[in-house]
Image (cartoon, rainbow, N blue to C red; front, side, top):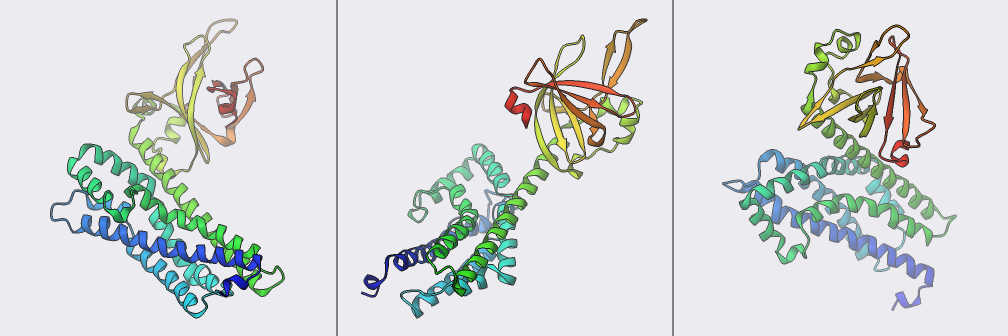
Length: 348
């Protein structure tokens, strides 16, 4: 009855608040299902179908997340009991997303999400090889409580929930008087939710970056590189890719004068370029000698596979939109010509 008396703007505001409260309750339900159907049975199996390491990667802090979102849900339920037509929620949302509570949420979700894609990829690979694990997951995912969602879909809801807060808070603010104190509180809560989301995104990027660098380091073969007497091989004798940050990775064709072109994998790190050659599972780091014709005789020029960024600059190849020159101004000057798969790839 009260709802029928509301103006359209306030009715819309109530709809968004209802969605905020309802989706929080749904999220708590999803976390409980993850705990009950997957996490606890996998943890308590006498003959585990999943190793502790992968289990901890999948569910590093599920109990903590459930506790946080249960507390949020309780706050919302309490407000609903106090006011069937909920009034201001700005202070409540600030209590949840700002200060110590916001820091706890930020840290907990980052911990859960940062290795998620790595964990799910490992699980998928193990599931293909392990019939017992595949059967366990299939049986659990068929449970009506899962509503036809697979484990990977349910795990993903932790991050998805975080993306909902900014959208819903912005919508509530749209239907709140702009000059009011409540509007100001909602906007502060909105900024807090965006900061939390940005932090989690960054944590995910950094974890995936480190995982990729660890994989590249594992496959790196420096044996040919280390045998060459050269200042660069001495400088990078202990090269460890895991100590760097990967900014870009992609395939290029290295065009060498009077030689067959070489396919290389370019790694752009924060302070250097690394040129690798694929050979089966290995990634070879090796020097390349180029013979340049001169008036008297061929001059030999050694091209290094590791270049510090402070000593290089690029130039376009006028006759090929997919190609570019990379010029090294280090002690032994050298010019490299690379071609990308397309002009768009070159711009990356």
